[in-house]
Image 1 (spheres, rainbow, N blue to C red):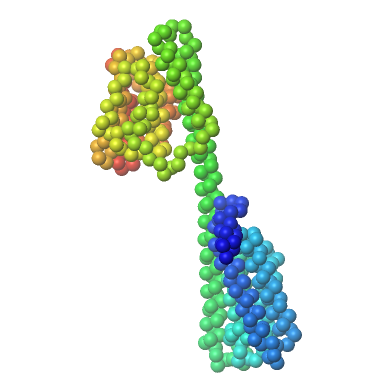
Image 2 (image 1 turned 60 degrees about the vertical axis):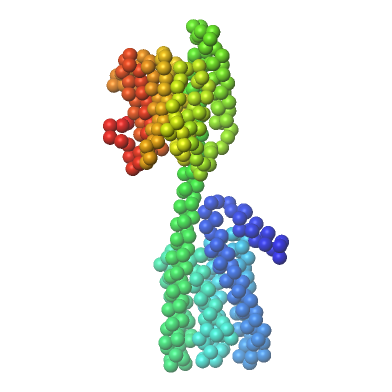
Length: 401
């Protein structure tokens, strides 16, 4: 039993060639088990009726054919982990059912034609019509074929049983309900499979874009450091800090190229985000005031966007601002939070200067894509303030970029 359980779990969870095949597994298991059950019922029925005078050789042949066909269908569904039957196998299944209805209608007593297992063909047809959408893709065609099976049943059963018209009618309604329900179920399953495939492809694409964006982020910072280190006018006192930053960027770049993106279920505190971002900028005249906001918890992708934005802003301050004071302030306002980076450097005129790669692709666009508001305020000689803020209603605040 333990080995059987392991084999079942292995069949259920391993070997799917696509994400959409996972959707097929429960339906394949259900239909496969139903066909196995029908095979067992047919075998028991034949064993109990072996001496029945009505059991002519034609019925024995049809019974053997039905057992063989349902066995093949069950094996096919379990081995292929899919309910989607080959057209030929489905057509053989349908033909055996129709022929069994006709043969039993000819040789078995008229009053026994209402679906008891001594006359098994009418009951067997229930499973046949339920299996039709597994190999007939068109909904209208599958329902039409199901109606045809019901018509054959009426034609072979109703003569001689006119006083049981209501029972025959209910069996016909049952056939139609089985085929319609199966059509709806399998069409929904196919739609789910397509959705899973599209979602999987989109996830792969987004992961690729995320890795490229992170790689470009680190390349931008690393190239800025290399350009800085290549200059002859770097004060000796700055070299240790720049070397440490270069080592950190090299490590970050290696991680970005080899590691998987963090799990979307993770959350980082704003304090951790700020600490990660400011690590390596100890040589700046930096003051961190995050006491009022360090406890705020951010989803991992939002946290990474804020962290990369802070790193980019601090590099801009280091390379361009010539600031004597830089302040990072974080505050939690209940349903929203904000983080600002303010420096007293040379500043610039935002209306006259186009944002470069860093501000545009590593600050503004990533934060907007995470539903955060960002604004850059600056003026020549008056320093620069970069403000990042969450939006409680999911939209940017009025007047913000």
